[in-house]
Length: 111
Length: 115
Image (cartoon, rainbow over all chains, first blue to last red; front, side):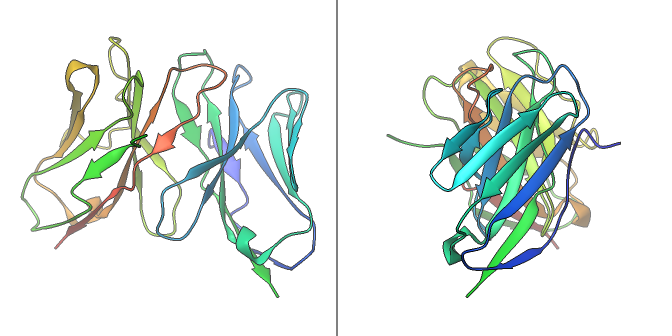
């Protein structure tokens, strides 16, 4: 089993739709969770960290489910500019451990 | 302020040659990561430096790959006797320190093509 797994997609949804992605992780000791966005031929950039209580930033909501070992990203009222690959990232366990990325979920928003 | 920089941005080399890729992290960042990304694929972890601790080299795919970080700042990833399967984008990232807020800042990457 991969340490961090994501559905590769692509997800193709109409503008204005709500879309959600999940990301599962294998190490129950993981403490830090993130969602990154990567545009085509660009480097990844942090979208949001994921906190235990869940957090929201505008149209984006991130949640953590420790019992089932997954994080989720919800995008409401999707825009054409949301088209990108969304990568989840999880640290391996201890606070000083490395970050492992999922392979990413491709999202395409159509007009 | 200045972000993470990498050089060269593009490198074309012949099979069997050695290459060196450079990463300048954000000043003051103690953690530095190297990843590899093939076309349409996710990020493959290669190596992780954290302060003065021994680096985590568990992701290096073979002994042809090595990396060093001098003075806790600049890092160089060296690939010896390059093979065609080494062709990929090599991304470097740094973070202020590991922990709950360990946001990584990525450089623009070096696109390596082995012919």
